[in-house]
Figure 1: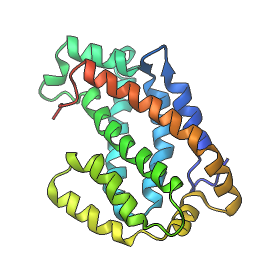
Figure 2: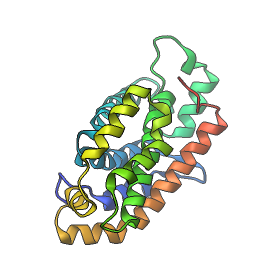
Figure 3: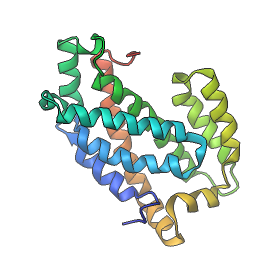
Figure 4: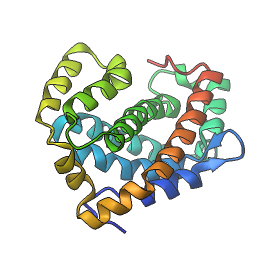
Amino acid sequence: MSHENNLDLHHVQQSFHRSLKEEDDVVIEAYIDGYNELVKFLNLIGTVFSFVSSDVKSKIKVMDKHKEGENSIYYDSFKKMMKYEKESNLYEKNGFVSGSRTMLRLHRGLDFIRLFLKRLSEADDSVNTCAICQSAYTETLAEFHPWYIRKAATLAMHTLPTRPDLLKKIFGTEESLATALAILPQTLQSCDEVYKRVNQLYTEFEFHELP
């Protein structure tokens, strides 16, 4: 296991793999378990995405409440949750904090994290990490953020260290970095599969546009 302040890709990979249910569903608890670890990545790259990681914590608290509530049976998996909220029109109900809407925010964040990690791992040491981060952000999360957040985030990305320093910050020692880079393709594959399934469910239930 990696140090608690470093990103443990093995844990992410195992959790996401465990979250895969049947052919097209994803178990919420295992998804959150993997996501919680992955969010360390956002904290480790500096204050750039602290607003995203603090938002993640509040979203996970919402889901914990759903899982402890009287209708917890419907919050076991994405498919079950969406079916329940769609059929009972709960997602439109005033004062109700929709699980589908809550998880949509995490889903969009996962898209950014997996893309940035993928590009960071494929790049060579001379590459500008700010440019990688900005392109990953522009292609994913940026379209859901108001302009002032986009502006602040894009500016803050200029403070990112060089690739070797950034990787060291994320994974720790040379040894754990080597281990991490070896398992990264497998982890990204699990991220991609989870993302694809969840994305498909949001499409099927027409929940992509939840405000």
